[in-house]
Every structure is written in structure tokens, then in C-alpha cells.
Length: 109
Image 1: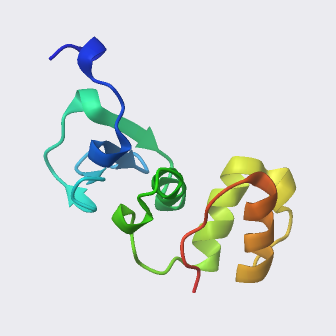
Image 2: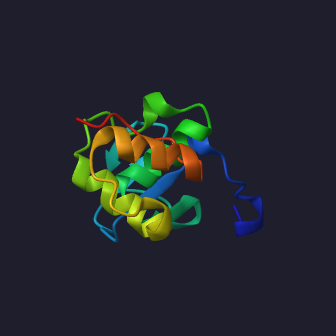
């Protein structure tokens, strides 16, 4: 299969999270896998952004299902839009920021 044949399909895609090439998140498996095809792989900054991508594709159930700390969510939002994030630090304030910039957040707790 050539690169031209590899069409993005969120239901069967892989993400290298935070630069850790030893594994990739598989949307088909809903878990990290150690073997993944380079031609179906995208790099992503963190699991919060991964959750957003999958949730927008109707695949929130295939995204990481752990509770994320407010610190993790804040760091991800700062990376996306530091100005909008400002000093937001608790789950409620971070949720408001996420709504303002159009990010779907995982559970914060």
C-alpha cells in the first residue's frame, strides 16, 4: 500500500504521544501498542489532545479513559492557547477555557 492509499481513518489510526516512539495509541484497540505502521501514525503532544481528537470523531470511548489531573489539562491548554488559559487551574475554570477555545476535555479529577 502506498502513502497515497493510506487515508486517515480515526477508527483505525495510531498516535505517538509526547514523543514516546516505543509505543503508539491505537484507536482500533483503545490502548497503547508497541507495533504500529508508520504510514498510519500521527504525532500528538499529549493524551489530553488525543482525547480531543478522538472525541471529535465520535470515539471518546477509544481514548484514554483515566482521570486526568488539573495540572495535566492545564499544561495541555497552555500548549494550545496560553493566552486563553491564563491562570485557570481548577477543573471548572479549565472547562470554561476548553469551551472557549473549542477543545473536548477528558474527565478531570
